[in-house]
Image 1 (cartoon, one colour):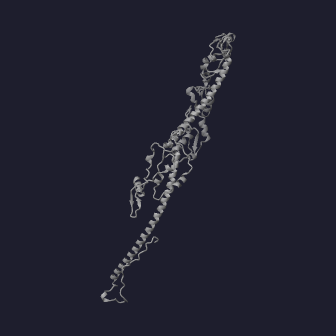
Image 2 (cartoon, helix red, strand yellow):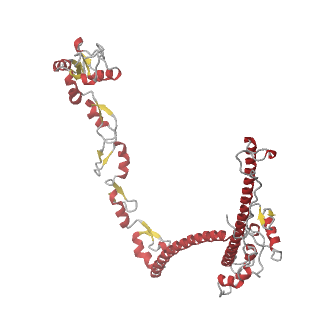
Image 3 (cartoon, helix red, strand yellow):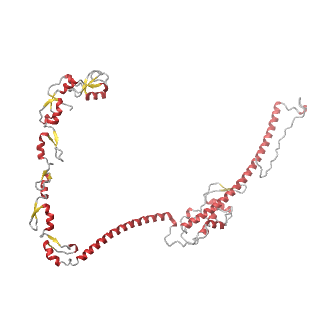
Length: 486
């Protein structure tokens, strides 16, 4: 409790210099022996680590509990009950105030003990409130059940112990026996037992077995109704099972329809409705044997020309009339086999956007990179036939590439030999030029140093013969055989 109402003015030696109230949980310092409230000195040291009185350095480790005499003095101060505003006039020592409020003070607010009531009342008014509380439970005098006062009137209309009067036979009985009485009351109006089959009769229960059953037309065929009801129940169960199966089959059909649409989209132009394909003849030879019967392509034959006749080799539908090729725009046209190879090469180069040039030896060079020719796909056959034709084209193209690689190796070898010969010629020519330049430099050096004398004066002193005449060096021409190496 942070605040108290003191009867007398407290001694100034028992007052905290921070909160200016008597000590609560007094705490002293070891360094300067000043006493404060424990909570007050804690808050003060959080801001400044100094004693609030003399400003000396101070930490939490320097705090100790105050002398017990100081504690007893502040605990024996007389205070008023904090519930004085509610009417409590009790006074006691400060150390006894907590037990007074907890045990004996009648002006403390306590919660109501009834379930569902959250109202706070004074402890002295608990009994009065319990009698008037709207959430208290009272016992019904008839059935003994617990009900709230607010639900008492509604309970009277539903109480099973209350006596009710039958409107047909005027007998009185508890409400809890109403269902049993209605099932046995002889005067209650009921329909015929064959009302489900169509009998419209209604009347008192005692007349049903006495007069109506013997004259009811549905009584004589009740066996048929029983059999028919059993059969209808069986058919209803079977229909439910069949309905579940039909729903499952419809789901499977929807899934298969979506899968078929995906397959049609994947096949593209190779998809044909049922019955539009010609019959497939049985093939006894493999694409490899057919390729061998045709023979390997010549070295001057274009791969595109070779693969252009795949429909005649492995496709039995080449003569079948179909719609125009849907993918013709994505494939190059076939080369004309009647033109010479060089002209077809030029046509092929110009077709794919490249330019060609001819060197002095008649070799053809393509100045720009050309696209790789692709064999056209025959869409008039099935996908299996088209794939077989593509496989044959790949085999033929492989043979053509192999032949082209061998030709390229031979041409590269010849070019290497010619390059070696040219380098040899340049080597011998450079050697001759070097010797000539050497002779010229020797003559120039001799003229500068005076080592060469005038011809009219004869030989110079120390010379044993005419000066050496340096002429031009004529190198021996090399042999230009194909086997010459550097």
